Length: 84
Image 1 (spheres, one colour):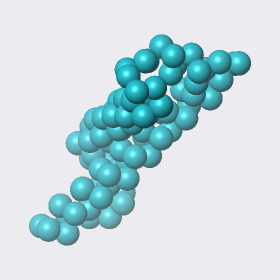
Image 2 (cartoon, one colour; image 1 turned 60 degrees about the vertical axis):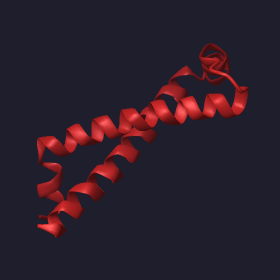
Image 3 (cartoon, one colour; image 1 turned 180 degrees about the vertical axis):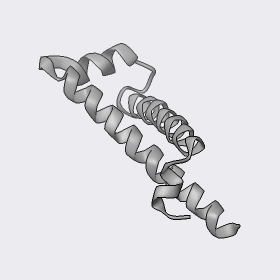
């Protein structure tokens, strides 16, 4: 199975979505706890989006979660292919 065959599977994209969302939530929660010592979501969000940085924050979060999900899902599917 090559790259095209892997990315054309519907289950691959579901894995990308769920792995990306999981990364997004876990990464931000861990970052919040390390920076503030408590779950201070509103403070975190206000600092990250101050001075017109909302679009940059959203794009950065979505891009990071997509890349993480894509890389992990591709590795999983490639590993399954090699195993079979």
